[in-house]
Image (cartoon, rainbow, N blue to C red; front, side, top):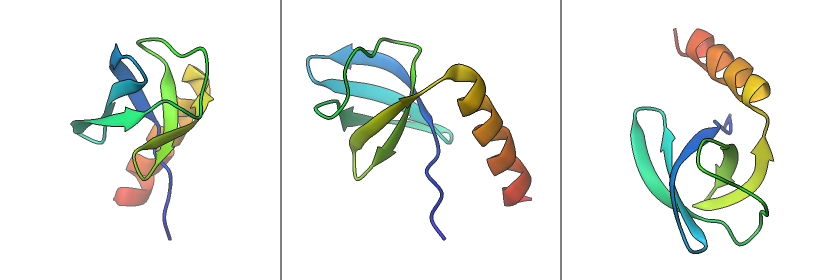
Length: 70
């Protein structure tokens, strides 16, 4: 089973964003989302941002993921 984990935007350059996700950072494409800024959380697949997630929801997902990894 594959679980999409939110990533937090730490830098934006044009239509790319660097996100921090699960102890690493990487660049993703922002072509499919609008109105994002540093600090926002995104759900990504294959290095594309699919949608923005509210901070509280992202934190719930991240806590659940930590529980599932144990």
